Image (cartoon, rainbow, N blue to C red):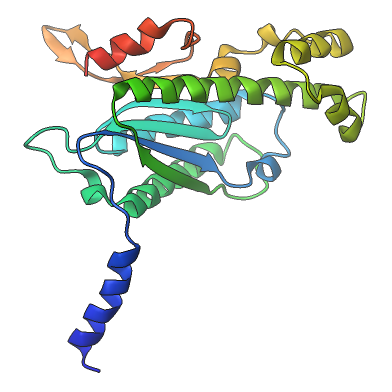
Length: 251
């Protein structure tokens, strides 16, 4: 078989496996640490300021590199990047909306940056790697719903991990799982306080609510400076919907 025919044949297989995002809709890129429970087994739990700082820095890096990104949300070992593809008539979608390439680029950026900033401050078992998923939502209302869901997910993980790592000082893991089974989050927080004397509300807001990264226009010397802002004091999105509504309204 000739080179040209073989090339066309193999490329047809490649193209049939490619997935492309819809144009002109919000894009949600999620980047997660791979096997981070084992990787971070030597750092402070349930919250490490150095680990949090490295993840926030990685979120900022992704926001500055992902084409059309306008909001980043970070919690635990996950980063969520919200972007607009094909923003106007003069812009082209990042990687022509090829989902695999966008995911690959995002994971590569996160992996390289996180390892660079964490190498001197975190005692990790080995270099970190990140995996990703990508999907579109039909409108900005669903962007807000996505971020509300992610923050709620973060709160659940934070409560669960705080209970686990503090109760392990008194009980084995199986006993803890039985204690927590079927309980509401408020009930778990009560157990954390009464069994361990730990007030969940004393943990940093970044641990309980996550961190936001977004552009915040400022007037400097008469010019608009549209730099990225890191917000470590986020509200509860579901209780203060105006926060996200105002950000998205200005896009």
